[in-house]
Length: 210
Image 1 (cartoon, rainbow, N blue to C red):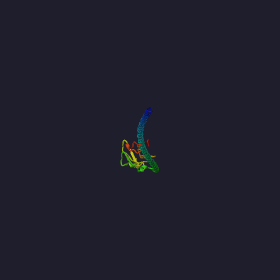
Image 2 (cartoon, helix red, strand yellow):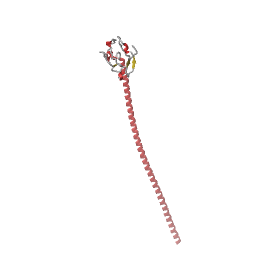
Image 3 (cartoon, rainbow, N blue to C red):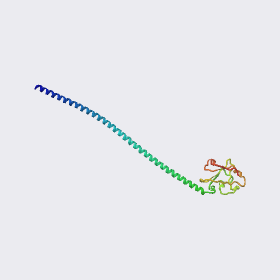
Image 4 (spheres, rainbow, N blue to C red):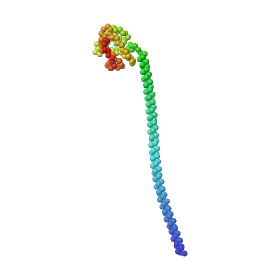
């Protein structure tokens, strides 16, 4: 009986020892697993935080790109408006130019005859009682009293201002008929709007002889 009782006690102790050992192993496993899960959780949290930061950075970059796009769109719209305004102004100027050209051509077609009659004449010098305007008074007499004269200038000139812009197609001169017609030999007729050097810078046409 004592042997059986001792065997039972040993078996009971062995069973309790096994239970304690199993509980310790389970505790270690649970502790290891829990620590592993905590580490993974922390890593996941860090990764999540990093992803959140990257998302925020991407969102900020996206917002900045949207602003830049809107600014570029606004600039493009402004440039388009300015282009349209300049195009409209150019078209208006072209229309005004064409209209002015047509009106000028109409005026030139209507205005015929002696344009110099309404002009203002001047010359390098005056001789006797003659005036520069004697040359444009409409009289075609060839004697001395109907012509203008200068002194013996080195470079004599006579000029008439037509007081407007015209297309000149013909110039008619009446020379002295009572004497000395050769005085106009080599004279130059210059037509233009420049007064530099008394009009010498304008295009010229030379009178060879009379």
